[in-house]
Length: 210
Image 1: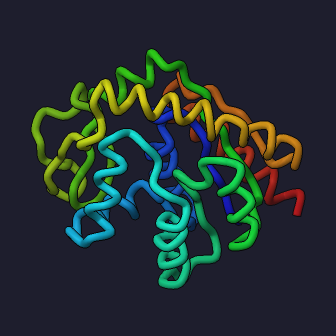
Image 2: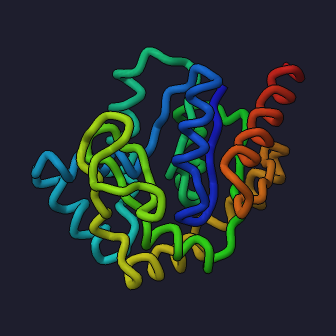
Image 3: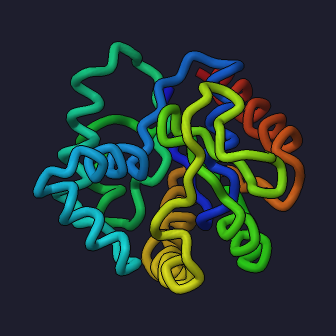
């Protein structure tokens, strides 16, 4: 089963993925993490990605596809959760050439709440898990003991630009997948446990229909 996650930045996609991984055997394909891993290598491609992201723009499709195809080739799983791809209709059509989509989960969240979450977000440089500055007392990851860092693009200016890009490019995907009867919408203003419960129920229902 292949699941696509949609939602404004800060809507809790990473937290949801962690919950799904505990309950189901899915391999995460996070384009954001794949791109950040490339940035960390210091390669020419990584430097280019960092420059684009720091300006608040989206990385080019060809670059994103290269990172995804690399992940698909090295993974042994047949079940995937896609976080950060597709971001627009063009990417959605390209994705259909790579694999089928069984379910699309859209996490709905207000911009005010999303901004607050992002400005307080810390990401583990080792395992990639995300935490809030309001809930952790140090810069050490409670899971793997890696270093917790604020993403270089989590600034008010960068966040505002990403919100604008989301509503301009990604939001139309809601109607695209709704027309294919693949979309479910979930209120992400609630607790992570409530969100995960709704999504797991939808996954089970979709599996039972097969």
